Image (cartoon, rainbow over all chains, first blue to last red; front, side):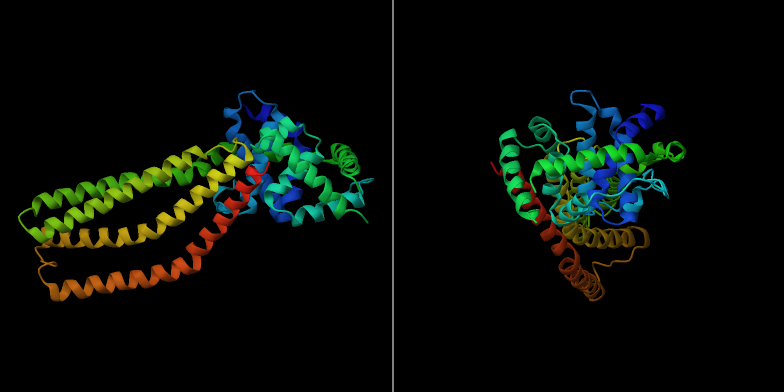
Length: 162
Length: 205
């Protein structure tokens, strides 16, 4: 894949990458590093993309795997950087009209308390992914997805009842 | 609040992001992404390099072993050293193949995280043994080279050799125990607990 194609795919899916980074890292520096790691992993894995699944499903898989590994510090961060000093995907400094909904702020705080796998599942639920897509991304059965979602609904109802 | 309300809020948030989120194309274009391929392959390349080094060491030990085949204690030491080196060679080969498997992150989240965590546990467990093997190979090489090249009989002069071996092994063991308690055991426990969590996540129906 050439860089132009890559940039176009990243552009189409920048919201997804931004939201995953925000969900797994609470501070700017970590978010920036995670964003960089996700972009590098995407770039390196593009040759393996065979079109059997939707590109967004495939990006979710890579981005979530990178985020979880980053979160767990499974690898030495500094060794793999290519020296990006700024955020590639970011909100502009002045962003008139962009106020974070209180529910979203609460949601991000709630996500911070969850373990890595539950966080991934809730993100997919919020994205309104189909059971099939969720099963594909997470590597579990659709029955398992359904069971977990019914539990999540209860937990969220309890958590956000006020 | 119901999940559907949160989904709606999330969808609105996504729409807002679409309007304001900026991709710094110039920055992305300027980055040498090709260079990152090497960085990602680095752990695997290091293990492959280890394989080459260990192969050379085995050959050196065997050559010295043949040269000193008439002396039983050196022959036995050489055999033990080359055996240890072969074990270390297998460890490196196993790790390199695991690193290759995990070079790309496009596996499902559960499979990838299970594989990654299992590899982490394997590396930590092997590292405990690798330190001991390195000490044995070091002693073997030293005694064989000194005997073959300088004619000094380290194994024959037990008054020098035994204290030296005890010193090295003793220090190695103390260092190893501290390192295991402080670093490896804690990391293994942490990785195992994450693995349990991932497996539980996959098994719940």
